[in-house]
Image 1 (cartoon, rainbow, N blue to C red):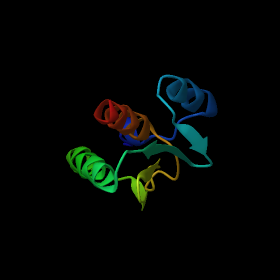
Image 2 (image 1 turned 180 degrees about the vertical axis):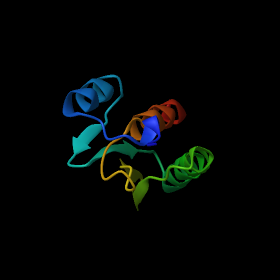
Image 3 (image 1 turned 60 degrees about the vertical axis):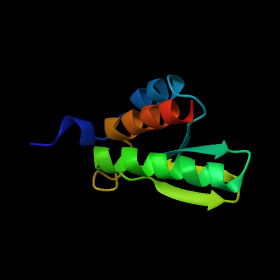
Length: 98
């Protein structure tokens, strides 16, 4: 039986989920958000906090670090798109970002 957090979401579920998040947008079969920090080390510290959260959730984002800008992309690759797991991790990342 498929785990409910790993079931692909319908378009309207994704739209509603994104409306509850800060700055996340749909990018095809993924969601993404960019974060900008004052300094490179602030960006790295944020990525380290995201890494710990992602490891605890056993759900890992694609991370692009460009000096003070970090772009996170979430997709449940095993399901082939966006699931509740992506929206939950995005909410956790938002909480880290403050």
